[in-house]
Length: 187
Image 1: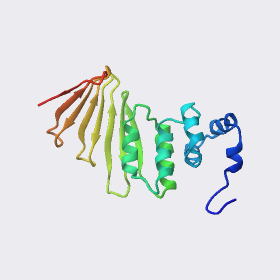
Image 2: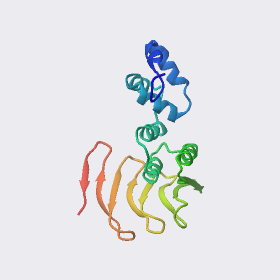
Image 3: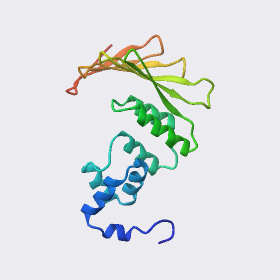
Image 4: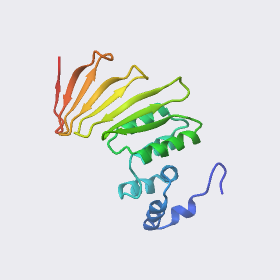
């Protein structure tokens, strides 16, 4: 073992196929992210071949590559993704606790409408709405603290997204993005 960390020379000497099998066997996203950073060539290959990946892996990579994370931003970005799940939110809550944070996401489902709330216990009654997904295919994304949330994006089932500007209660559509990449700006 060398100073400052483990010796990866034996691991690096393994055939690439065997290293990829090791990546596939790792079920902890944080451990996979740390290994990707320790062995970039193998990490890139493992990610490309699907041995590791997904939204939680991306967050794990960000946390492993920096000394601290902005948990509010991390949780908001995760909740904004279509692949966000209650299990993923629970995993992130556990990671936050491991990192000395108490931030978490809360998913409430009522009448098939899914509401994601950002909960920051350090602030009095902070439970801000982050995303609301309706069963008919419209998803609304919000930013702001509790009681001051404002709409910033509205995604429709057909792939059209509209982006909103302005203060709460006075939001106006700023631009519309179409699935093909074309954008239309509003006045």
